[in-house]
Image 1 (tube, rainbow, N blue to C red):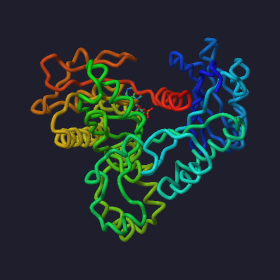
Image 2 (image 1 turned 135 degrees about the vertical axis):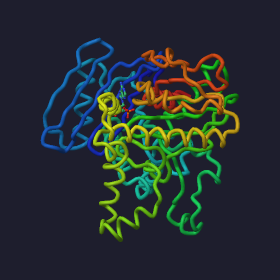
Image 3 (image 1 turned 90 degrees about the vertical axis):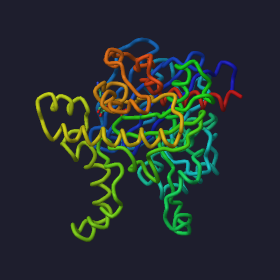
Length: 403
Ligand code: AMP
């Protein structure tokens, strides 16, 4: 790596999309960001924002057949801004990889053995890891000389003790099929728990934090002294909180019931629980803004969906208070957590005995900054901490390659 190689390209490859950001690691600033959507469909869409030059967002619609074409299109956009992938200033490419199993506890420079291991995990992450692998291979073909780093969504959760990570099912069956709780959104939980400690003016080792990552996907984690000790997502991202389209926790017997009584097969049940449940299943909307608007108009279905969402959230706050023993802060993050003041207010209401309270004025402030929203007297700090998974991936990638 040359001394002036200070840029990192972050790639988040989904099955039909690629999100990207190019960052300058001297100050963490963003030079460019964009998204390729609907890869492989009739009309794909590329939206690119050249942040370094302050230029306007450029959008184009045309068929982009596969990830290779998508990445080439991204490379062309970057080149047009003088930020091409061939630049000696590019230090590495950081890839978000959803499932790292138990093996990958840290960001890892990708070689053939690492790729094979990510491939071996496809059975436990059939929707995500194949897309991540495609993204990696394509980026490798474009810049074979450049270090490519995998940053795993599961890594932060590998510190969970066995009693939190294991399901109470037959051990031989569980081990034979690698069935256990892995947790996801780890990059966000790591970043937000660290930022929360910073906000309190303390070292991460000295604080216990409950992180509530509430986006379209949602998960909670209990972080003791900077280490994750429990998290709400499990073998897959389906477990835990009520989400935009996922059910979160249900009695597993619901699955047998749907099969035996409703005659649904495994794929249909998978779609029902992952795509047609949660808020959208309960009231037909998964956007919290729309749900709040409907509640304001007196819509009962939207109100019930909101109450179910909040009830589950409170149960996890209570459970993780018990898991941690002492809680210093509860941090709200992601689309809903950062923006929906009514969700924050409702989630904490009635939990005064646990030391939790929200100041109505502070809670109503809109800001991109990390901030406290609890009154001074509260025993537990309540914080809003905007997450930044791309910056965290870039930081971890750069730390690894610049050593
Ligand atoms: P994420 O997955 O973190 O991008 O979060 C996306 C979700 O955040 C959306 O589906 C909305 O439910 C929610 N969201 C975004 N902006 C707002 C807002 N201003 N108020 C309430 N909810 C919001």
